[in-house]
Image (cartoon, rainbow, N blue to C red; front, side):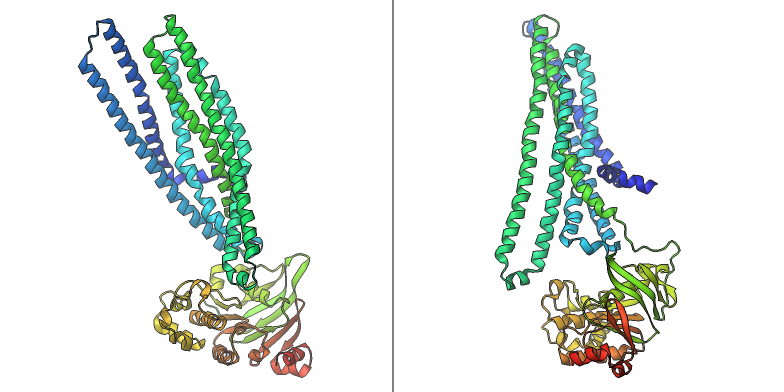
Amino acid sequence: MNEKKSQNQNPTVKLVIMARKYWRIIIISVVGIVGASLIALITPAVVRSLTQVLIESDNNNGAININLLVTYSLVLVGAYILRAGCRWLGLAVSHIAAWTFVGELMAKIYEKLQRLSMKYYQDKQTGQLMSHMLNDASQAHILIAHAVPDLISNLIVIIGVVILIFSINPILAAITLIPVPLVIWSGTFFSKKVAPLFKADRTMLGELNAVVQDNLSGMKEIQAFGQEERELEKMREMCRVYGQINVKANHANAIFHPGIEFLTSMGTVIVVGIGGYLAMNGNMDVPDIIAFLMYLGIFYQPLAVLSRLFEDVQIAYAGAVRVFEVLDAESDIKDAPDAKILEKCEGSIEFDDVSFYYNQDEPVLNNISFSAKPGEMVAVVGPTGVGKTTIVSLIERFYEPQNGSIKIDGIDIKDLTVESLRSQISMVLQDVFLFNGTIAENIAYSVKNATREQIEEAAKIACADDFITAMPNGYNTLIGERGVRLSGGQKQRLSIARAVLRNTPILILDEATSSVDMETELQIQQAIENLTGSRTVIVIAHRLSTIISADKILVMDKGSVIERGSYEELMSQNGVFARLNKKSM
């Protein structure tokens, strides 16, 4: 019930609640801002008293008390200094709270992205998610550093000024407040009109981030296929639309803010006109009019600030909506309440009548059943798109099967914690991902405090040591983003070395030799054979020559296992596997 209530809350309110540990700091900021505003209330009173003294001195043949003038001047100087100090306190402290919270919010979004399953990423663009984390989250600083402190402090100032002007002249004060309902109505109307523009601005910025990220990642393909002009035109159009959205939003601001200034100016006109008339008829003293005008300036300034807050809140709201699109997302992969920790894994794997689909009308796996004993090598072969990679994704629990069960050491993986399950498995994927760092750092990525000897030994097993040592900086060579400075075969061997170093009881090889030459393939094949027996190996392969020594081979077609057996057994059947083997030779 509480979770449902939380999801129905206004996103800006949810952000403020999330920042509750900074409320004390925000209160200090508010105290500073309120202090500065309340001190500003002293100056009209001082000027009012000084004006009265000057009038009285004029009535007394110009005799002026110099000491009194000096006193009033010093009071004003002290008030201005103290006001500046309070303003500094308010602004500095609020930004400390705001940007610290923004940093934590970004980290929280990233943490959530790491916990979401692969299903969540199926229809998401990387650039969009980056925009949620970096651009949208940063808008929270407007809410914490400006909107909340300004709202509280300016409301206090408005109340204080209203009390003071009513104490001077209740009738004039009441007349002066006539424009206030118009200001409030204008702010409400403006927020409704401009909110869609700010939301569109955030959305378009996210789309721009997504396209830029895609294009920079695929720059080689853009240039190779001569599509620079097409991509440039697409980018120009998106930038044009983004610019137009901001032009519309700023045009609304250009109408709104001057309109607010005009409405607040009418209050001053009322005081000058009516107050002057009252003074001329002896119903109001000149010092009171001067003080009233000064208080009115203080009164309408926070009103103008509050009108600006409508804009700030809309900007923060637009960002908050997109932030909670991530934070409120539910992962379909979760630890069960009583999930067990898989501490010591033997390595047996069992698929029992497993079915899976990404979309309900497009089944990927149909009633798959097989088992792998500890130390066995099981190969999965078949044409592209028959569900081979999906099998290993299910073992890692990147996705949940719709039917059937998958067991590790006789335990359903749904009953294990995700972290402990994945700690027992190493994967070498066809699409190798390497981080921007050194070769040694990439090999040791999954092992804390790995020694150089361990790294080099893993590289030797993966047949990578020769090309690494041939590089100018050896294992300290920087490989660039996604390993851009390496060939496909080199990247794949580093990925194998990374898996070898992790030394888990289950090893998954998804087309691990697809990007290597025949000589390197033979070396990697020998390395894999050296590992078999010591761990369970699941191999997905197109090159059937690499799985001759497999204990069991599963032949798949259209999401089903149509043949199974050893290499010799399948060849003797002269079925699908035998035909595939002839084609690959």
